[in-house]
Image (cartoon, rainbow, N blue to C red; front, side):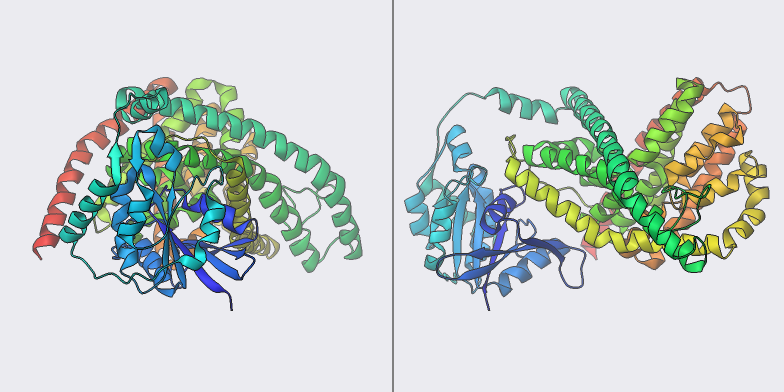
Length: 612
């Protein structure tokens, strides 16, 4: 059996890049048993032997205070050899974890990474003396370029089981301080333009415009390239290659029947319609690979660049204060941003949040008020025909819902929001090789984890249509749709289709001959009322059935309330533009007022828990 190497280190120290160089392309993402915490597994072959390499979740300590730290600690205990990746630009903080690793009964070696950046910052480290004082091999590396990684592999047989005596926290920091004074020297230097930009990214006056610009460029790239890739896939792969195969299969099954309706779906005008047939092999495959995957591929590439360049943690810091007001901390901005690409990976990203409470709030807000890229494009294209004012009402309404619903759940759901502790790495140029590998791993993870749930959800909806339950539900809910939302009874079918494809449901509002007011109501309700089948099934997996049922109830009530309110307001003398401005202003005022109360409540909760 291959010996097990575990890579361990603080977040943002280049650990995953080291892993990428060591293992090549044959890697696998796994959930640690009994948790939703992920780690990556790969294989390293040397001339002497083969190793199984595990990339543990980034952690600051092996004394567990969260699931992530618990998993990292457990992986270290199971290791045959530990490679501790240390950030040379932040040696003192990184050595806290190093001293804990050296207290475990396992051979260890230190990869002193980003040694080039340390030199650029005027940090001089005596590597020989550091190795002597720690008692284990210390190998300087530059993971982005691969420098020193061959030396690291060659040094694996020299890993030493130090088994140092455990230290109390105060003694540990004193010990680290003594080490630093012996091995590190700081040389004075002036700030570079990149460091000046780093500081500007964290100041509200300059950071907010920078964030707005970065997000604008990112979404322009995602929309433009995503549409280009999606058009190519639909034209050449689905229409050119896949459709003839399905036509042949449909002919073999006689063009009808229960099995045909489930696999191929209903033929539209005697032909296969990928978006409308509702078959597992037609709409099911098309939703994931023809709609979700093209936009998601570009989105993941942009996200990976923002992560590895060092900007994403700065965005989280900028968002932290605002996110705290709705019961979340700054890192929750990640699933929200992901949601604008596709809600499915956004739901998967929520697993990185610490508590069940945060996951519940983040999942609910994301599903209710963050439309995916396909739905977003459809809303802009169709509602925009009536003028920018009505389009502004749609987005102002979703923003208002996001703020107010977050404030309400924060007060109803027990618990408090923990403070955000996040490493802020320096800006750096991402490695294209690491980017490509990360992109491949994420896409593979999505396909492996989400495909069964996407196809399963579509199969369920298909069966409901086939047995006629959808028509029956439409008959029952027509009075609600007409009386509360002011929409024609035929709009019931769009809400039911929205469970499968929200963007298609928005498009189905067009033949109904709606007024601008009705179209705005329909767009908002479709965005807020329920996640699509793919997102719903993934949310059930991540949240559990009980929490998902609670979240679903909140979504339905919120959508009906928002639709009813818009039906009243847009039917009165309130012009659309004034309504949009009023909703945004009111949401901000509520967040500011109720946020101050929330802060006081959280601190009082912490004090009470400490006393208990």
